[in-house]
Length: 456
Image (cartoon, rainbow, N blue to C red; front, top):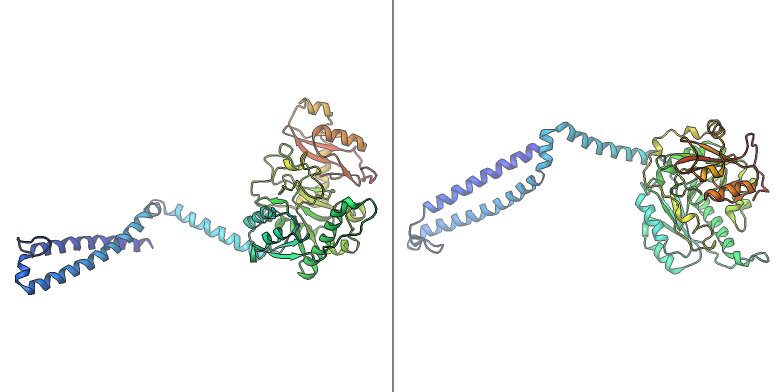
């Protein structure tokens, strides 16, 4: 390629010399009485006139050719720095080309080796679903591996039009039953929760039964995803498939507010006994287990009950891979202003598919987890709040009753509610978070065995 460009330069130079020689030749062949672009002698001699006309035509042709060659020379000059780089440091330049080639190879490997996992976006009447869809499409590495299915309830025309505007980039399905639901006495204000549960059941049946997928990532229409959202779920899909002690993977950390997570360890992952939701992956076999007894309402709290969880855990990240921007909804902004709007969304791409995730295996994880938590020195809430802890940590705050836990949680600004006895983001009763740059564990006493569902 570069040898060809060198030949073009030489060719251009020769053309330039030939052009100047031709002009000299023409000028020398003309009479000193040349005026106004016309030769006096040419007027007297028709034969000379023909020769001059032919020469002028030839000059015109040369001008056009020279202009064409000049354009080529300008293009070559515009790439001069690239050419000079090759001449001075060919090895480094080839290294750059190799890097691009490696990137292409890695992408090809990513596409050819992955399982197909659809993204199910649950939509209703928010035209702001556009923000959710735009980020999913921006970060999606492959439409083949991650097809997007938007399931819409409510029949809201503006939202339907917004979804339809994406055309073939996604699949738009609509929940057909928009009728009111008969609810128990006193539950009229919860009608929305009943409709959401009905929608989830229908949509998940579509994904697993009509579309015949074996796994799904569920995203609500008010969630924005992180740049490594797809990388995160792709890496954890085989972990979820192979570990019967797990039943979901979530992109969410309930206590993942800025200042409450390790700022330099966004690759950290945890096991949690609390079902987080808010961007989560489910396998078909688990849905087949849940679907026959799917609840009429409050499906997420139902998932957190021991009868459904069956001592299984989920994987959750240190730093959330989703962020909720939906203050308005059936929950009327519950927790949003106090906690959810402060959740930190991960911005650094973590190559999870290149990381050894075997530390998440239950036996290995439990041994390391218990050792770290219960070898940490016990401190008081006052010592922590007043900045009197010496050393890098971690440190442990102990609780022995639901009221103890709530007091500590409220004092430190983390979520204090319990569902069937399980604290948010908790594992084996322990909640892990960051405070004042130190790792803190809120933990039950040594010897903890099981949750008490009466704690709520």
